Image (cartoon, rainbow, N blue to C red; front, side):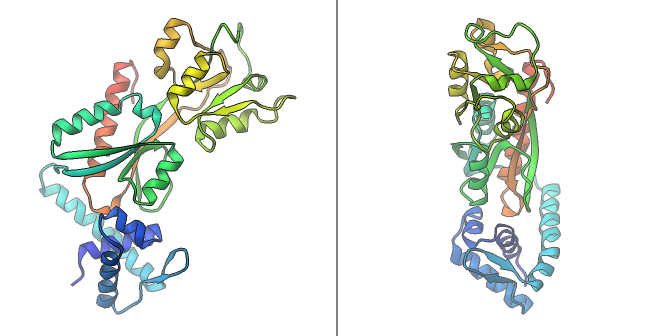
Length: 302
């Protein structure tokens, strides 16, 4: 008899190309995953996976099984959700989040989790979107709250709002009395989100090569550090205004009148659907709701 947990294991190994990563997502061991796959191969009488030096490859028969396995698991999960009460999360959930979310509404999410799911504990990892997405793929976290979406097989993306951006600077150090073209900022020292992030890539595409001088571009993966450096006059920076309301009110930072809008930061809760755990989906929904409440408090829609 084909077991659902064997199908889940097979889907994850196929998507992650790794027995180790699949085991991490399912909170089990590699031998346990190998046993489930062997049982599935015995049931079908076919080899479904090939182990290679650095990855696991799905065979032609495996691709055919995968085509049916995904809707079977998905429909089974949906059927359970129809007849079961709202799932209660217990145990430890590993959550990764970028600094912008940590500094805005993540505490509200944790307070709600503790109230509605008192049996849950959580581990929090703060890092850049790129590293957290790698952590998710490696099975080191269960859900990531990051700049997205993430275009990967098997990953669910739940939109949790956008952070509008603005160019800002210390007005006593840098004066902008009239509207400027964004390319003019290349003549000033720039403080940016980490290399490889979406804001960094946008700045790199827009400003590199637009000035006779070499672009002075410094990076930080800490939002509070980025804000402090900008407020102390070390350079101009693109920051969500909602995160610097105090600095704007006190006059230590001022919005630069730039003709072109800086693209908003799109945030998503991302997780693997085949893990079989209800926790990531529940947390993603709650994250979207708490983000909506945060923006409502600031007079904006999600």
